[in-house]
Length: 373
Image (cartoon, rainbow, N blue to C red):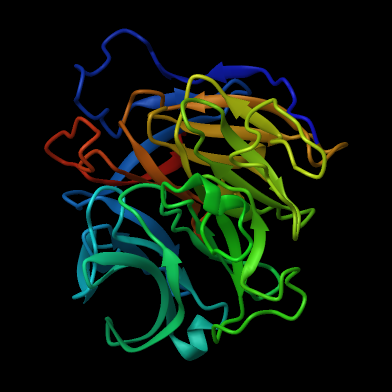
């Protein structure tokens, strides 16, 4: 499918005069308004985190958060407190590598299983690894390695974990800075992976391996459209050509042979792409009821873009983007992940302490988007 042109707009705080000085977070009282009139505020839920990378909610409302240096925190949002549930002792944390994705088992309320995607130090090198733990009393134990030896590097490690509506565990894997691996179906690099909860390979994976799709450079966000069930993904391009893709099982998404508007037979082109780069990371469809206009919109956290991208899907053509809107641009700095919370609010985490941002005293933060009365 060819990429489509879309209209981009920007939501601004109201009123424009009296904005905070550069580098100062807005006050909770600041009100932002979207193109279609949605008025919202941003609340700071937690401060002082160190490069939070991924967030996942438990059924009881606790928020599991990974920090790239190797910690899993369990956050009590009501009390604005957190406690460390796990500190990895074999993590490789150079560059973009480290503790990345987290996902909770669909039956977490019964089995308490937590899944992590991280970069492990092995000898003088590193690999990416998917592991499973069991949570008990706020700590993680009973470790099991589900998938090992995913190529790793100091850049392009992918790292997102998410359970699909089919109950399978999906993971994004970057090309580990070796672009040729993306087209090699004997390698797990440059892929979106799909495994069963016990680490085995689903029988209907095209290559009889964990590979679900290939030809990716560095995908970092995945989620399923709540109405259509389509899988969407965000992906970093080389120098621009960041992509939003609609994922199809077994398909080749072209890297490094094509990117952006380029096409080749038997290769998928993105739904849309971005020049200059926005560095899209975590992505989530909105599933709550607090913001009726947001229902089934795709929200994408961006790093270089320093904004939350809102994507509206065309209801008549569900693999076509109707519009885009840039929310909070330049307001909170680098945003790594966005999730739709069980309370109907949107949650973000910043990544201003990752060596590429301009942190303020309260960074890194977990933020919550709530309606403005």
